[in-house]
Length: 495
Image 1 (tube, rainbow, N blue to C red):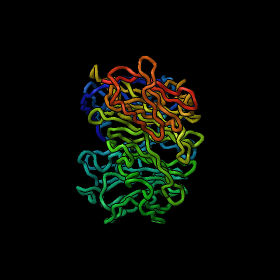
Image 2: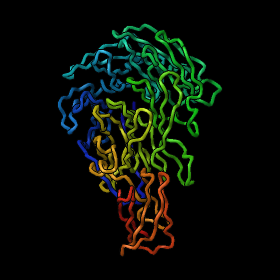
Image 3: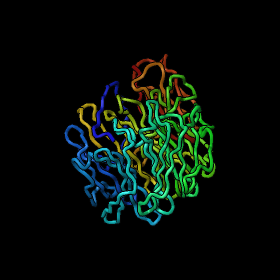
C-alpha cells in the first residue's frame, strides 16, 4: 500500500463554466475513503492523516453525519504500527447486521490477515485469522496491493480472501491465485491454489449467487478474454462464463475497472474507461458502465458517459454503491489536467437495470480532482470523496461533496440542486460550438448580443455541434430548448 501521494500538475487553458456542489467537509491534511452509510444521516469512513509532505501518518475510523460533523473517531494505527499494514479492505456488512473490515500486515518476513469487528459506538474487536505466509512480493507491496487482494463475506459471516502468491507471480502478472476461506471465528476451513492463469494487472473477487462461495474474474492461459469462475462453499469451480465482455466494445468493460455486486439483487456493475466507438473521431475515450446478471454473469447492458474530447478515468476503487431502492450510483473523472489529476467529475444514477435517471458533469474554474470513493444515501443521493488541488494557489486539499436525490430526478430538480444539465465547450472557442447534454428530443439555439438567432441544431446525441466558422468574434448566448421551454442556457465566447 502506498504511503506517499505524489501529484504532477500540468496546466492548460481553464474554461470559465462552473457549477456548484455542496461541500460538507474540507481538510488540508486528512481524507476519507471506504465510506459507507449506516443510516440516512450517518456514515462511517476510514480517515487517513498525512504530514506536510503528504506522507500517511495515521489511520482513523470515523463516524460522521452528512453535514460533515465528526460524531466519533477511533485511532486504528500510527507510526511504526501503521507501516506494518500492507492492505486494508472496504467495510463489510455482516449477516448479523454488524460491520467489519479486514487487513493484512507484515512483520519481518511473515504476513498475516486480521479482522476488525465494529459495534455501534465504534468499539473495535481485533482478531487474527488462522493463516500466515512468507510467500509474498515485497516490491512495492505488489502481493497485497488493493487491485491484487480480493475479499468477500459469505452468508454465514465467514470470509474468502484471494491474492497472488509471490512464488507464482512473474513480471507479466499473476500465474496463480491463492484462495483462503475462514469461518466467522477466523479459523481456516478451506484453501485452494488456482493455477494455469494468464498474467494481468488486477483481478475481481465477487460474491457467488448463493453467497456461500465466490466469483473471480481472470484470464486463462492462452486467452485474450476475461472469464468468470464461480466457486462453491468448498472452493470448487462449479461454473465458468467465458468472455464476460460479450456485449461491450471493444471488449474492455472489466479491464482496469471497478466492479461491485449488489447483495440485494445479485447483479454486478462495473465502471471503466474504454476507447469510444462513436463519432466525432476526436473523442479518444469515454466512461463505460455495464451490468451482469446474477445467475450466469451475462453482460446484460452497457451505457456510455458524457462524451469528452480528452481521456477520462473510470474504475477508481469504491466508486459504485446502491441505495435502498437498488438504484445504482457511479462516479468517474473527466478531462485530464496532469498525472493522476482530472479537471472534472462525472456522477450518474441508474435504476437496477442500468436505465439512466440523470448524469452530472461537474467542473470548476481552477480545481482538479482525484476520486477516493462514493457512498449512496439509503433514501437516495450520494456523497463523494476526492483530493482537490487548487491550480492557482498550488495547494492540495480533500473534500466531501453531497449530491441530493433531487439532482438525479429531472431538469427542474437538477437546477434546484445547483447542477447544469448542458455544458458548452470549448469556451472560448473558434469554428465549432459543442453542447454536451443528455436532453435528447430537444434543440440548441444560438443568439448574438442583439438577440438575433444565428444558429439552430437538433439534439440527437450526447454532443451536438454547431458550425460557427462564419460568425464574427464576440459573445453569444446558447439555449437548450426542451418541450418549448428553455432548459439550460449560457454564454459562449468566440475568439
